Image 1 (cartoon, rainbow, N blue to C red):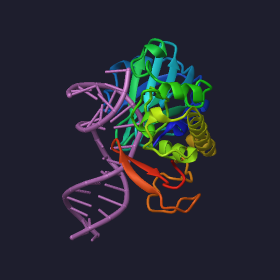
Image 2: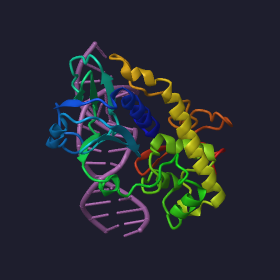
Image 3: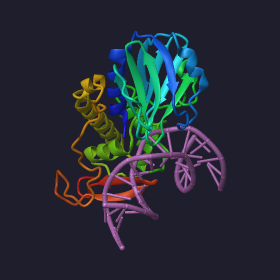
Length: 269
DNA sequence: CCACGCTCCTGCGCGC
DNA sequence: TGCGCGCAGGAGCGTG
């Protein structure tokens, strides 16, 4: 499931081979993604891909007349194919550039492909996003202020994209483990020191995943390669009933806001 | 403003 | 071996 590191790895993987190339055709095989893929994408024919940016988990493909916004949802992946094989059942969209096809595969269709022709902050999906987790704007002082008066659990708060973007369910559990903070702690009660600790943990967790993902980047150029996902040694996520890697206590799981949450009762308070 | 629960969808793992 | 069920999850959106 693409979280922010995977999306950033994807961004780099598609930017390198496609930037500067001209799009000559858009093929939509299934427009029924999270929102209908708009018909106006066909007007992209003839335009050059100027850059590929990222905001939160949205990929932003820049063209002269606007931005193609893509979200990979739960199961989306993008591949650059120089010799594209016959599309599979879940290959919903091709952006055909000269010399390579950018193909979107998304079995669960939680993803999105949209078009926007104004500044980023005028798009409803992008307008109210919090800071990027790896930016200097995301720091302990900011987080402390953002959490004041929030009575939800800290885990839910850091997964709220108006607080900080890019922290999904896996890295929420991992970051809280590293920070030694129990996921159920009320967000507004975290001390400034613990906010700073949590910010550091989030940055470390995401950066480590990013580094690990970067090593498989070259796979994007291969017709039969796996997308650039990576394995990570999780401390907490998915380890319910197993011994904590640090202290040996049994890792627990609980449901918070319909999401599995993993934590160590001895390491996290 | 804040919090919560619902929703979309398919693949997978499990029990029988 | 096969079938059917329940779960997993990002994040927008409607409701209270």
